[in-house]
View (cartoon, rainbow, N blue to C red):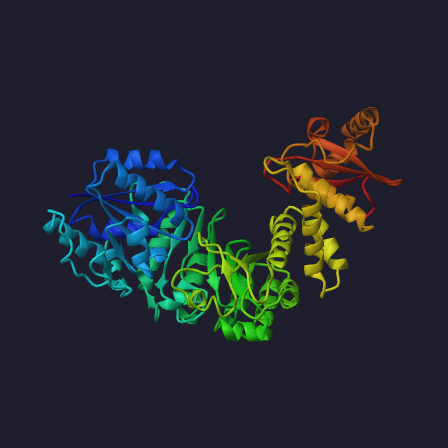
Length: 562
Ligand code: SF4
């Protein structure tokens, strides 16, 4: 009996650790292999590739990002090979197996962590190859004749004794790796599936270190820890941080989900002292600062403490910070959300993600949808459309603000401009700024597809001018910073070609200037642009691109007296 495990990853660079675990835990007992695809792949091609391997059983890992595609894929597979046995697992199917047995046409659903349950199920299937599965009764396995929603929990110590799923020969180097040091979450956030699991379990630290060392050696590009709250245990947290710092390698970064209340001063001071910049990225979910909202979703946090901790981290300039907010939570109106946004934006994290509430299958909030008047999309990711607290129009307005936030703040491409703009903005009005920007996108939308970076710069320039703000110099600097070779520009050239050529020629022959900045004549002629700043001089932008210094290099000409 041949089994293929598969899933549709969100992006090509992602790899599924679940598939690898299922494979490792069962490869010695069964004829089993795994194959990954991405959600953009053609489903008929995926089905053909899978069926060409002549499987008897296909196991699918189903997540919120691939559930709709997975349902279509199961239908294609069944129509092309009706005798094929389909098993679905993953967070998206675990809590409502009946739905997937009926709508997805799968034969079995595994609820929870499937490493060991899959083995029991494959044994039972191979003993019943005549096709009568009605008598199969396994905990955490459902089929049309038997529903068992017990959420399976694998023994992590046993898993750690197996060959490592992070060290498979077939995995390429330079990967984006999902890595877990624990499973489960002790918190109860009512919109989250992890709240339905009780307790937390840890992998042994030696196991964690041994695998991290391997990944560092194999040049993983980015490692994302999937621990729901990485810093639950301060001692373990510090041990892992210290291990990574001791094995620091440039060009790789580690991402952690952090509960800010639990970050101790000791850890923050330590990181601020010894951590190399941009090595760690912390994702911190704040979601709302409105107390009745936090109470309703059972998310208990002390925002004053969170603020203090985040400010301390920011002062150290070592950790890249990503904060999360969710729009659409209970009891949070448009005005109250505006306040949450302003409270959180004031922390000036590198990124602020504005997400929209999704009513996931199995969550308490989905069960209470009527209570809060939630209307939501029946298709994944089940985003809300309106509620008692937010109208459809208000949610759409928030979506435009989110687009502006993502484009102009989170992208990091407008650092000088946004810094200047935010410094001028009243701290109670950050949201209003992104809201206005969002509305300007609504009035003058960017082309649906294939718009240029120049369009986005020009849009912001025109928006600012319409408000009587001229930040052209900052925008120009940001624009140049996006390139490695000299670009065309998003503005109408203010200097005629002849003058520009004459000036670059003059600078290229200014031996003293070249000496001061260690530049060569041909670099100025071929890799520099010149712009007038004021009556006293010019800004020379040099695209050195030799890796030895900041690129581009912004210089005054003539040089300013120090
Ligand atoms: S949102 Fe985070 S902290 Fe809350 S239950 Fe889910 S995983 Fe745990």
